[in-house]
Length: 544
Image (cartoon, rainbow, N blue to C red; front, side):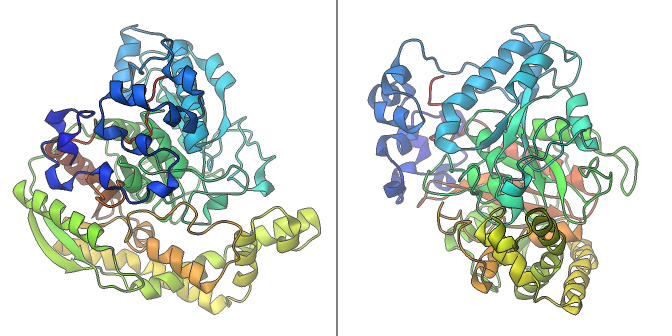
C-alpha cells in the first residue's frame, strides 16, 4: 500500500488507505523495460537513484549522466503555477531562468513519454523577462494542446495534411492565456484530428502513461495530461469535445475540468463556439485551474454571468446521484465501479446526501447518434484532401488508414440518419436539465475502463463498426455531457490496484453551475489530497 511507501509524504497518504495505488501489484510490467522504474514509488529517492541506472536509459539519458553529481532533483517540482508566479514576483528567480528549467524538464522526460509535438523554445525565451510580473501567472511557462490556433506556431492536429498549417493570429482564448501571464513553451500530442480514443498518430507517435508505460492515457488531451502528471509543467491546456479534459486526467491522477458550453472565450478562428468542444486547463491543483478559468472565461454574460475566481469550498451540502451502470454498450470494470462507491462514501462522510440513480442516456443509441453526427462532418475533410492531392483519401497518404477509411465509411450515412443523430444529441439538453432538477451533481465513472493498453488499437487499422463501438464505449460517460452543455470534472481520488494507474471520479452539474463544481473540487482536495502523489515516471524521482 502507498502508506508504506517512503517516497511519499505520509501525512498526505493516510486518507487514501485502501483506495491508494499499490504499484508493486502492477501486472503489466512486461510492457516496462525496467521493473525498478515502475517500483520506484516504493523506494526512497536515494535508493532509486542508486539502483536504477537502467531506468535512466529508458527516459533517454545515459546512465552515467543520470547519476552524475551534476544532476539534481528539481527544487521547484512541488510548486503549482500559482506558487511559481508568487516566487517570480518575489524575484527568487527570473522568467528566463524558469523557462530554461522547463525546457530541461522537457528534454529529460519527453524521450520516454512522448507528450510533445512542436517546441516554441526560442519564442518563449524572447518573451521571458518581458511579461509583467503583476500578471496573474507572471510568466510561468505553459504547454498548449496542438489543436488550437496560436499565431506564428504550427497547428498540425497531428495529421500529415496539416503539417504546413501555421495560423497567422491567436484565437480569442489564446489571447486570454497570454494576457493571464503564461509563456507558451510548445504544443502537446493528440490523436490525428482527435479521431481516436488513444493518443497515438503516425506523425509523432504514441504518448505513454507515466504510471505504467504499457498503457495509454486515452485522448485527446493526452500529451497535456502526461506533461502535467510527469511534473514537466504544473498546468497545460486541453480541449474537450467528448471527454478529452476528463479522460486523460483520470488516467494520470491530475485534475481536469470541462466548462459549460459557451462559458469560455472562443477557441475557434471565426470567434464562434463549437457545439461540443470547450477549452480549459489540466492541472495538479484546483486553485491553478480555477484561476486560469477566471482569466479565460467569457465576460459577455451570454449565456451565463462570469464566475470569477473561485477561491475555496462552500458550506453547501449537495444531493448527489451515484450512477449505477446499466451494462449497455460496455460493462464498467468492477474496479472502476468500486472506486466510485468509495468516493460516494467519502461524500456521505463530508455531509452530502447520496443515492443511486441510473445513467440517463441510452449508450447504444448515443453511440449510433454520435457516429452519424460526426460522420456527417467528414465530407469537408474528404474534399480538401482529394482536392489537394487529386487522389482518394485512402490513396492520398495524408491521412492515417483509420481516419481515411472512416471518411470512406461515412459516405454511407444518409442525411436522414445524420439529422436523427443531431436530434438525439440536442435532446440531451432537456434530458440532463430534468436530471438536475433532482440532483445537484451526478457522480459517475469517467470511463468504464481504467485505461486502454498503449497499442490495443493503432492508427494503421482500418475503420470498422467494431472500432466505432470500441471508441463510443469508452466515451460512454463523457460524450453526452458535451452535447448537454454541462460542466464536468475528473477528480483524482482512486487508483487501480492491478495496473497502478489512477481512476478519476466524474462529477457533473447542470449548465452554468461551474462554480459549484470548483467549490466541491476544493473540498475533495482538502479531504483527500493528491498533489504530492506522483507517477513513477515523473521529475519527482528523476534528476534534471
